[in-house]
Length: 359
Ligand code: BEZ
Image 1 (cartoon, rainbow, N blue to C red):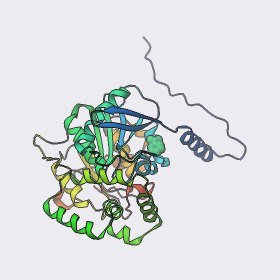
Image 2: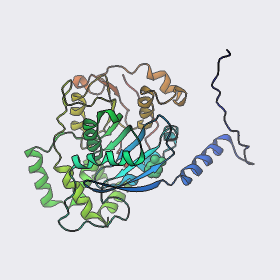
Image 3: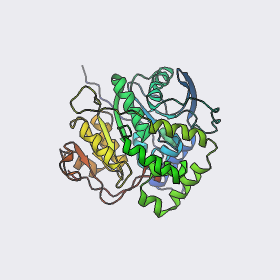
Image 4: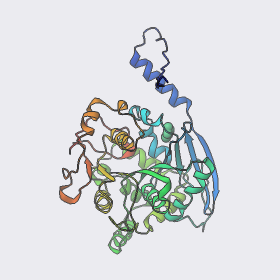
């Protein structure tokens, strides 16, 4: 019997006058982003209702990418710059995305009544099964930032069979110790809640630089109509339990994990420590800049991205990602991707283009 061959059929669209293939591709991408406005849903959970927005159409036998944002942000302010970045389109067209807004953080959310008991981070993680059940998804690849990274890790610890991979940006897996509490209380005497949250999102260098980006986020947080709700999420974050991760121990993340931290980010030490507690054969540790490209390697390692989607540079270097201590001395034995001089936080926009993958 003749062998069946998989043939890829691509639709050829005629170019408009004056259009080059590149500008046509850019116009198509812009149109697709404009058309896909996402569908917002809410579900009831034992800890109150939770809102999430779904982009893209479900792909058979593929996990959904589920994101969870940090304190002071919502899914849009946290993830839009990344997911609408041109190079991300290869990834997102292969996955449906489910962007969760922590309760009270969704656009237009009313302020919770006085005395409202905001869920703990563990309870926020326990709301995720209701979302997956509603959407009929059995597995996810989680992408979380800060508090969101903690929530997704907690979810992965309690529901390991439903998490195929995790991208954790600026995670701090530890509960606050008494020294942290003392520092937190002292800072609280002289700083407002928005300033404390900005200190969590950005490094001191970035804050004192007071760039347009910092001014933008300072403005968003200070004038947020739901600032009281933001403070409740902030309190839950500060009251988090220790994840108690232990390399090779009973409590560890069993799925592939990509840890990301910014140069001089407020959580650099915490992420480095988290890296030391995870399985080195399952964990990649990198600094941002080439987040998109690293995300592609990560998905490819899980069998979800064809190597043809990667740049020639990436393909030639994928093979050489090995155990490395290049940026991390001997603290890390896991695969390490580092990016030369560029740094930044996720909300600052698309990752840069220059990257050194050192091995
Ligand atoms: C997405 O396509 O997944 C997306 C779109 C807008 C904001 C955030 C994410």
